[in-house]
Image 1: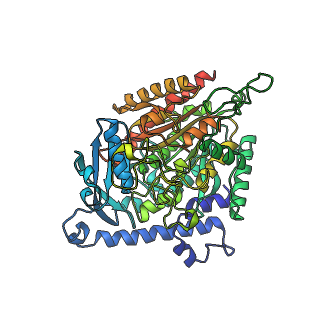
Image 2: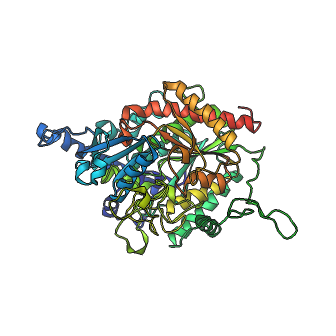
Length: 577
């Protein structure tokens, strides 16, 4: 393994203050990267041990809080929030609730045609919301909001060998959530245990300069094959441009996306969606069609974790799936036999800055952590509205028409969203497509893969498996029949594990219109026919605070979903699996 990769996996997620104190943040000073990374990891482990001891020996009243409030055993501090769940009975009621929430910048956790969840972090909802919202009945569920600042569990302080990653069934790793540097340690140990089938690619830097990585798993191994070289070459180009301070945006993609965003017709269609004819009566030029998968190559299957930082179960599940894929095919719950046909490419932490922020500062942070343009005081872009297909500069979609600036909830008096979207909004899509470095990195990585036939973006929560489109509830992909047939079977396979029911359909119909979504770009621009978004457990009882005891069950049932999708696709493409 290259020293740079080893340093990435164990060193880069440590705090800048720790690295600076060792004089190595900007240069290695002649020390080998592997040795340095090991030192940093050992120091960080000792630091966490000392912090844990302070918590463990603290008086009981300090552990539970002066007011007797129970403190989470894995948190550095805690506070109570309230989740308000509204049962929606009509479209008008849905518009009223969402309009009030959006006007007052409330944190909307979930919004479907039948239910809306709004989270209030510290104070009763009635103290910050308009009176009309108070009159609507809501189920109120108290949530323990934990701000992870220090150590979290004595088991995490043990050496990584205690995780026993050689066994999927017996490992303790999937019994808890992990901070960023322990995810790096997991990847390092996986590639050490399975060097012939795993490879880590550095796919670019985040907004704050963290390395983004993809774990590739292939039964053919990584011995300098054409596929591996091509992907690595593209990623090296991305890293070089980012280090030089260049804006890494595919100009063709961005211009196409910006044009579509302002309601320009797709190639070969007029504004009403009908085919255009040229002077000789021929149809206009159609959009670029993805080439068919090569029969002499393995099929590529891409799985991406939580683009929204607070969706921890999505990140944990990508790690479980990676472990299940590399594990021997004879082991219980192994997905290893899928490597007979597929190469898997897993990006467990597509939003490393935001994910780290949920551990250090704000557990329910949503966006990435880049500084927005125009000197805006607010930070972050909603990565899953920043993709270059049907991108729009306004955070529209939840409402048929966003509520006006006044407190009126009368939909008839509502106005369209202002231009551009509020940078302080959870759903700020950025000022241009692919403005977020993270989305650009993922897109470049996927474009470098030669045979991508499947894409699954893991999210939470809601228990849904959704196909394109997200930007429109009226448009249907030409491959909708195959997409939904596969989704129905995958949902049934998932349900057969523990009885968890998943809803299927297009992403727009399951939730709401959201332009600039990754699933639309993967299907319409990258040409990945079987593109999905999987919203994992639950349906709102815990929301984003899903207890750790559910990590393994969610991983196992999601593994069955992935297995079904893989077998369905292999059969459609005449591959034997």
